[in-house]
Image (cartoon, rainbow, N blue to C red; front, side, top):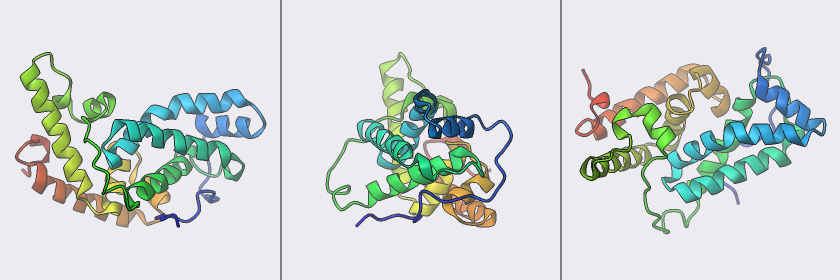
Length: 213
């Protein structure tokens, strides 16, 4: 039996589609039979999905596999998409389900995968101090910081972690996170606040940005 935080990947959203939502336009063209439109969607979202999945599984190889699986679900479920809200809301609901299913599988905690350093694009955007450094000592310190962040994220409750990742790393607004998670914007703000408090407690010694003023 599959575990899922949200039950229906093919939901019909009620908000009006934003003007100029290129992803939605590409998806409609794919629904009409244009295979190249899906190739464009793949190119636009495969790397962000790898980075998103990595935040849950902390292993680059498995994150790449999950991103492929998520995009396959998008491909196979394309007929269920309706352009009544942003495409990314629909995409990240599928992605969130896939990642939460993965970390809840019995063997996920049994198989000890190595915790990889964060994918460079994801790490550098959020934490300039984690950039690759030609100095081997400083580079080891960077990897230690990345692992500390991965461990702290992994200790957060699933819903807090999901809300935090969607907002900070995937740059979804509180309202968009609420649509993905099927909850209110107020609840999202509360989850992110609690996540930040927990991360501040864990990471203050090693990441200055998480220190309380």
